[in-house]
Every structure is written in C-alpha cells, then in structure tokens.
Image (cartoon, rainbow, N blue to C red; front, top):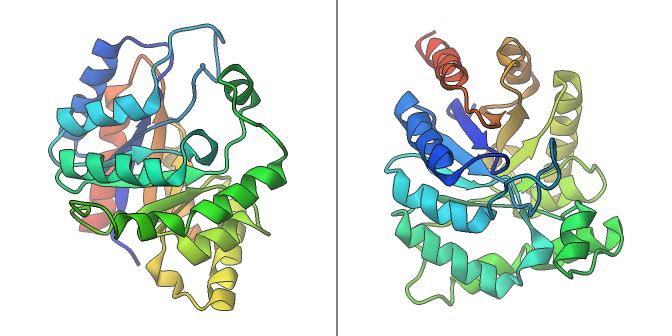
Length: 257
C-alpha cells in the first residue's frame, strides 16, 4: 500500500487573500501532506457573484507560503491553457517550490467559466477527447524544457468516468482522485485496476486519492478499505483548524498502528 497521506483543498471562494494565506500556513503547520485549490472563475456554492480568486496564481502563492507540503490544483481545466504553455508554467512552479508541485488536471465541466471567459464548451465527449490528446504531451514538453523540471512532475487525473477518464488515468497518471461514497469509490478503483491490466500498467504505480468533506472523518476507514491512501478534505472559509487537526490525527493513529 502507498504511504498514507492527508491533504486539504482550500476553496478559493468567499474569502479574502489574507484569510486564505493564513489557512495555507496553518494547514501546513498542522501536519498535512498536501494542499490544493481549484480552477474555477466563480464560486460554485453560495453567492455566485461572491469573492473569488484565480487558482493558478494562488498556486504560486502556496508555493512561496509553504516549505514542506506538496501542492496542486484539484483540478486544472484542460481547456483553459494549451499543453505547451501549461508544461512551461508547471516547470516554473516546480522550481519555485523546489520540486513540490503536482499537475492535477481534468476535462472541465463548469459551463459558466467557459462561456464568460470565451472558451469553447462543446460536449463532454469533446472535452474528454481534448484531455486524452493533451495528457501524453506534458512529459514530451518537459523533456524539452530548459531548465528541466526538478523532478518527474506527478500528474493527477480527477474524475470517475469508467469508459474514458479511468482509461486515461491508467495510461498517463501517477495519482487518481475520486469521490465517495466508499462503495462507489471501491467500484471505480477496481475499474481503474482493470484498465491498468488492459493497458499494461502496474496498478501499484498509481496513487489513489479521495476527496472528502470536513465531517467525513468517520468515513476514512471505509475509504481506506476501498483502496484510498491519500485523503483530501475540502474546506471553505472560514477554514476550520480543528478539522485539519482531526484529519492529521486520524492519519497518525493509523501510521502508529
């Protein structure tokens, strides 16, 4: 089993930058292994016209506010940046953070972002085909970068589509991020294992992460049994320090056991 990890996704909505930066530092100090944000242009809950900050810019802030955690976007939208640009941006952030950046990416889904920022929304199939076309390009472009990335930047793919997304994950990803409930996660995890067998990939080479809520600590054992080894808890402002602490305590209890 992969090393047990916990992370926090700090949602970049309905907050000030000062409060966000404080939460980043408090979460690292609490002992989490990873920090994440999201790649949207508007809030996804609450007031749709409420305060919001751009995800990639915040990743650079996270890199400079922290010294230990790995971090990334859960997940970047494949449609918003061409793959050569995203590879160059990722290499730069990899160096800024001394090799702690993870490229989290997905096909995209939030129509308002596309429409208001003048991206082609198309169909779900269009977006998945574009993701499949771009995923193998990142490592090709990183091989051309000067200077090269400090490490083989991990690629996280988020989503649970059994016919396309999980196949792409088996082919190209280092980390898969899925959702619950635990029985659904277990099923998707097995589908991913099956795709690994079909494409000739060792399933053990893909870390399994799951997104959970602040009140889902009691579900962590079930997710662990379902195959998850990296637990990423979503948080909104006001960011709850006790939830950070509880998640780390759950991890530490299992590591000691």
